[in-house]
Image (cartoon, rainbow, N blue to C red; front, side, top):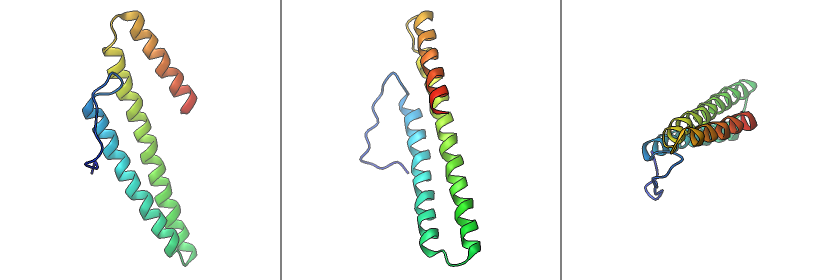
Length: 103
């Protein structure tokens, strides 16, 4: 599902396989959202709005799961790649602050 023109670079934040997994998840969500747009465009009856709401909720849940996946992968990669315990603690504290800010 990952578009061929997206180059995945190796880094300290996430591994290439973690990035590929997240990008694939986001591509699936993108497809879900295109489907929601089509449902909205074709909505005719009140029951159609129920279907739109259901699909929006599913896309929102998938995006939330991707956010958790991002944080989980970040915690594993960034703390295990730390040079020493103080750096690992600093990375963990930063990720905890990110979780607090965005979750």
